[in-house]
Length: 117
Image (cartoon, rainbow, N blue to C red; front, top):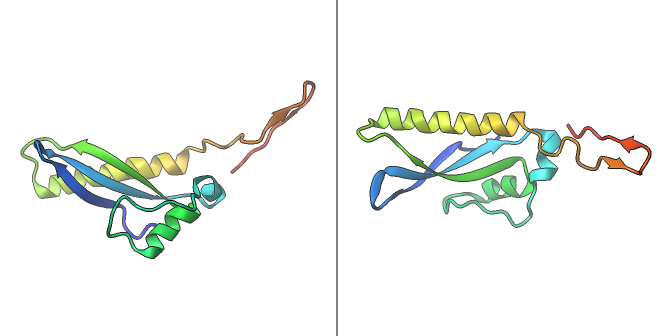
């Protein structure tokens, strides 16, 4: 489970309604090896050693996105918008297994189909 879900990095200097944010999502256990990257580090300089370890072992995945917020939004509206953005990302990570059939083979006569959680 990520320690945080949304981290605001900065705003675009020419458009203060455009934010660059880090999204951290929890990775289902069966797919953590697919997200593992021994050299992974967060784009956020405030990430702890444990945060980076979670990114490296694949238990957490990070996405850095740029998102424009409607002009005139209040702070609670901005917070809500970013929370919804994170929820969409978490739902995608939870519900989409890009490696479900990874390693399935065909030898010219018979298929060996794998189901990778």
